[in-house]
Image (cartoon, rainbow, N blue to C red; front, top):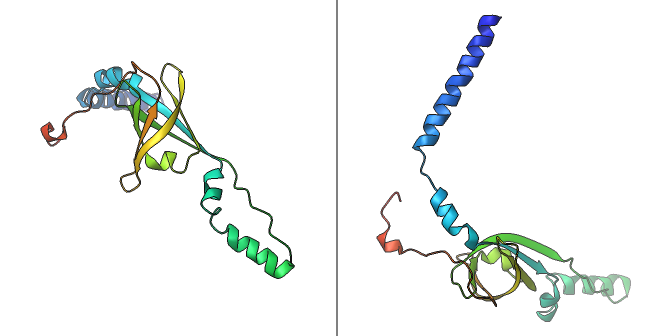
Length: 160
């Protein structure tokens, strides 16, 4: 039994030593994180459904009202969609408040809030989006924000 415990401990030590050697061979991203973390933001987008009413109501609402009228002889009660909140992240690309995030996070949002690493919160507006590439550009009214440095993809080598 003593031999089994020693063997198990020795095996654990070998696993730890191997894991340590593998960790040493991994790239070190600490400088990248330290440099860019202040420019990473939390995105919260709320959708109340108000914009869908302006477009003719949520999908299927007209059909529901028609069914209620036809089968029960009563006008359909308007269906109020529940408020939804999407959460995501993004990063500041310019000190004057432009932020990149995913389109699916802010799609059809009535209100978008941005929280910086220092806990400041801003209301953002969507100034551009491309659903095909799932990207959106937001703008907050602020200045002197920390921003990431965007590189030139033409100068990147394979494997970088």
